[in-house]
Image 1: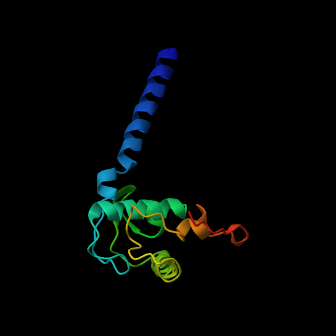
Image 2 (image 1 turned 135 degrees about the horizontal axis):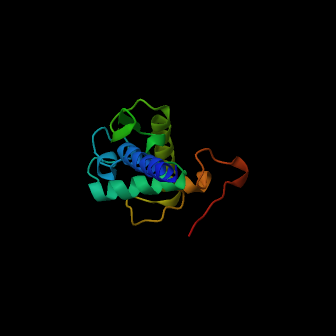
Image 3 (image 1 turned 90 degrees about the vertical axis):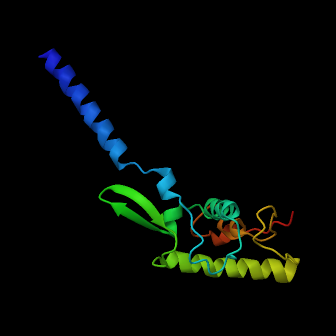
Length: 145
């Protein structure tokens, strides 16, 4: 009876491992950024800077890519992100927030290129969001450093 238990447990672990590997995403496929459909961010931005900018935005609003972007799936497996799709309302809201943030930085702080990833902007996503997808209005702060 004990050898059968060991076999059953080993078989279960093997099947679980195989199933887990089959449903995980390949980061290369999922994070294949594209400049297709850029409407606010300048199309002239480099792919490297686009990735830096998107990573910064996602960190500052406490969201993963799929918060604004559409996931394409094949069964349980994520095959890739459709960064160009405009289906999610969060993406449209993010564009409006980026426009607002850029206008504030340009008008009140004289920032010429708000998409320069080397700049620390006076007003950024984190000014209001502080790592949350929905800002806590009682904790909005201003940082001018």
